[in-house]
Image 1 (cartoon, helix red, strand yellow):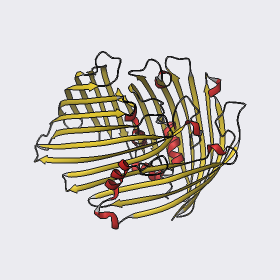
Image 2 (cartoon, rainbow, N blue to C red):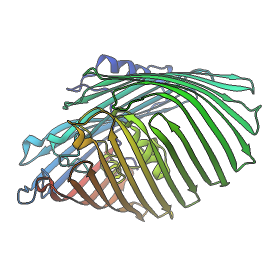
Image 3 (cartoon, rainbow, N blue to C red):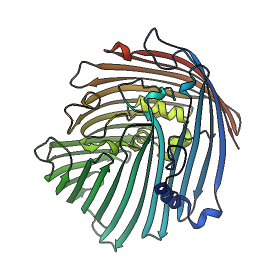
Image 4 (cartoon, rainbow, N blue to C red):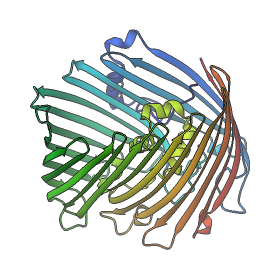
Length: 503
């Protein structure tokens, strides 16, 4: 059964008009010889009615109930060919409120990608475009399933185009040269738009090297924000390693990085090193650990993966420095990895509301008022078990980020530690009926202040496939936030009924 697959857009402007730069990406997505044939086109429309007892997620004593109607027309385009793979999923989300008419809004969602092999095994073109609706600030009320109030909402358009040149030097080495142009634009927001140019080069050892392996790599990236903030990052490195049988590999990396970005650190570049080990005791288990040193101090990383016929487990830890724009879009990759699927399948399997809930439960929502560079440390753990009729999942995380430059404005919101755990259960009750139950808890501690927010989620629902192209869904949602700031506490309950029709 197909349902809407939102959370993405093709560079639509403030009023739904494609900007000139976005047309470049559109052409990269669809202007191919395959345009006239072999397309799978699926129009759809979803209609829902929602009753809520706190439409603005207001503090206790100020709650107001409302009836919300939503119409969500959309379309999916697919083409899988020997030289081109294209997917475009677009939805228009039109929400109307019976009492709070000011909250009414029409937003766009699109996820589009195209992988085009221009010259066989040599020249490729990759294009991506997304548009998402998300909360603008952690300091305001943040809801799930479209319940965030309009004043704390923003839309984000991101698009990129990337030509890739791959060369094979016999069995000696494989070379890849990649250039990427990437732009992020915000709508109904005070945040600064930005763009980035990135060039990458890698030369990897080929099949002639059996147990030893090596890599030479380099990259350069320049980020620019409309308020004049810029950051430049570049790096050259060499890696060498050795495989001891099929299960154990050891490796080391040395290199130099040349950075220029706003920071209060005394040094922002210099030499670095890293050593690591990978161990695969079985075909379904892989463990990798890294340890090294960069200009900001010691670096550590860990990943543990195990997958069996029914279950999968994953534990990971990462730390490093990145910008706000680095996180845009990456949450879908992390969520798909936790669920043991691909991003494409993620949007095939879940609706917009479901993905919004999953992101919130996993601590993958991205809210920040200011553009900045951060030092981040992130732990994640996940477990998933599939019996065929039931799918169980548990995720836990802790993420801490600290600004590299700000000691005044923005510090209160941006420096924080988020800790959470969630669990879900999906049960196929019958051949055409599926039930779900999901709950989660997140604690956000704003570092350097006395404020701490605790958020709880609960959602239960049942979906019925009436015909192969018509489905109905009824769900209940509860969300609550407790805070040291009474003005930021709220509780909300809602019941949502949805009909989805494909054509």
